Image 1: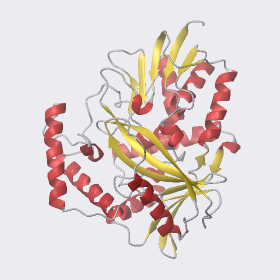
Image 2: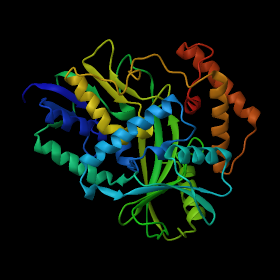
Image 3: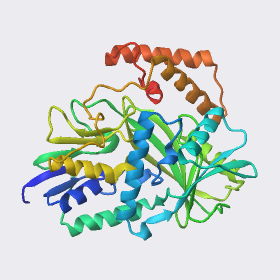
Amino acid sequence: MERIEIAVIGNGIIGTLAAWKLSEAGFRVALVGKAGRPDSASMAAGAMLNVLGEVDAELDDYGRRKLAIGERALGLWRNLLPPEIYVADKTHIYRRDGGTALEGKAFAAIAAAAKSRPERQTDRDICVLPDEPAVSTPALFAWLDAKLRGRNVPILETVPKADKFVHCSGAFTKVPGALPLYFGVGNAMTVRDIKLDIPARTVMRTPNRGNTCGLHIVPRGDCYYVGAGSYIATGPSEGYRIETLRYLIACLESDFGVDTWQASIQPIKGYRPVALDGKPMLGPMRDNPSVYVATGTKRDGLTYAPVIAEDIIAWATNGPRSAFAGWEPDRAPISFGPREYAIEMYIENRLAALHEHGRDAKVDDVRRDAEAAYKRGHEHFKVPATFGFHPEMLHVI
């Protein structure tokens, strides 16, 4: 094998797209990853190229930055992908009557960001996002793998010697000196043998329902992708959470009046990478600029992938970079906000999530859990007492 200039470690969407684009740019590239891409976020994803659908609060500076990156990424995907890759052309965000206050706030934030007036349909409000499609993950990977074969990019299972390295193995990424990385465990399923009364080639989804992704349904020809539950863990988990699958089935039945008695399901699990502070980890290591890290993207990795690939090429060619400034992987953790605000957001999300699963808790008990987690976090990570941990991280700190 000829000398490898750049080894891309991780063959999910980010790594596969980056390897192809680096090869097109003239670099001798090798892609490293297991066949079949087991447990990857990419393979388990609903593959929604969504931006506004992920808004869950009034936009702050971070939210506006994410929105701009996502909108750029959508434009790049449209210019890149052939029509047959798409399984849906638009997204409908819906809010049924009787939801939690958190869900209502998230729905209002999406409508405001989309500059859209919600439509009233029987027992729900719907916000139409006409430009947020979904793709078939298997078809997308088959298309990208063909591009790699056309460029003669080797796909290896062990890391070769190389001049530079791109680390993008999702939650499994290991780079000394980078921020701690956690596993966002996503549980979803494909459902067959049911008929849903929803518009053709349309994603139907709720806003955030509290420490979960809410319900989303993606048409996939002979089945529907139904997801997704989400929780943070320190490592891979065995099996699937029955509670999550039961919840998704219950939402499917209650929200769409469908009888799932004779339906068949196939559980799906993938690990989304979540950094200690909940922000992306994108860019070269400051102490080792020959190493670029692309992880910590949570639910945004597939959407952001073409912008990340552009940034990787800028790094490889010593060109100007700006898209991800401040999100370097070896940065100091970024505070979610003032400590008390972060705790209140944890409480609000936790109570909403428990309510969704038919459970309740006392506010004082949830606050006590958060305070105890903060004490552990401050002592372990040596951050100031005023530092606000991302609310999702309090489950594992």
